[in-house]
Amino acid sequence: MIVTGSAGQADATDLQFVPKAAEIAREAGALLREYFARGVETEYKGDVDLVTVADRSAEKLIRTRLGEAFPDHGIYGEEGTRERLEGEYRWYVDPLDGTTNFAHGFPQFCVSLGLEHRPDGTKEEEDGALTAAVIYDPMRDELFTAERGRGAALNGKAIHVSSVSVLAESLLATGFPSRKRHASPNIHFYQEFTLRSHGVRRAGSAALDLAYVACGRMEGFWEFNLNPWDTAAGILLIEEAGGRVTDFTGAPVRLNSDEVLASNGLIHDELVGFFDDLFAGRNLSPIPTPEEFARARAKRQGGGSRE
Image (cartoon, rainbow, N blue to C red; front, side, top):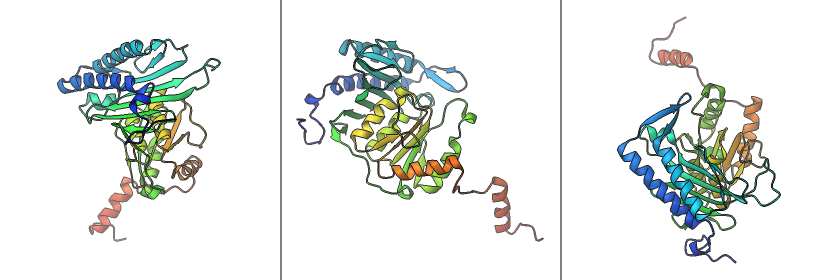
């Protein structure tokens, strides 16, 4: 039986992985705040994929602390850590989700730790069960946590997805790749969802976007080509907060999926149906080209043609 406190989540003493992982995330977040306050040297990896000294330093700290706290657990990090991956448990670590924001002084970034349980017999191509999640926003001092079957919390208080039931009244979030954006079709999806929803935000941290769906600040999130360290923690948070995460067809999401669609559950079928229309080119809403808009503006201002 799970003992719940006044917040509604399992009492912290009842949680197996979150207390120590949260402590580690807070320590890494404090390190990020220090770097952010004084500015960091930035180097470029590829086209515009920014990698900072803070990113690597935070991953080194997390790798060391997780190794001390959970010596048998594997670690799969965004900045290259690959340790003990044959273990029964595996942490997916993004030490600084929102690197581009961080590098530009935009205070929207976080530390994300997601734990997968991979018992004996789990094939490498198979996912285990997501078991624990910690996402920490050091600039707002917001700590999102979850353990499988024990609910989700923000700073120790239970969180739930929103009760909005239609797309037209929903606030959504998405993101774009930092490289090769011309190869992604997401700008078309962004346009169509903007026209059909209450708004779409693109804040630059997938992990925080997922956490915001979990706590009801947003109703949905979608993105192409994310990595396990981007999504592992957020997926569990949303599921434990009562939401739903799939691919764009509504099929179960995979950690290495090219598509992630998350919602409060109430608008999920509507989102999936809309994705089906978008991929098929059905029911699209044309918007004026800049040239068409200029002509209409000129006409309104009395400068149009008198043919």
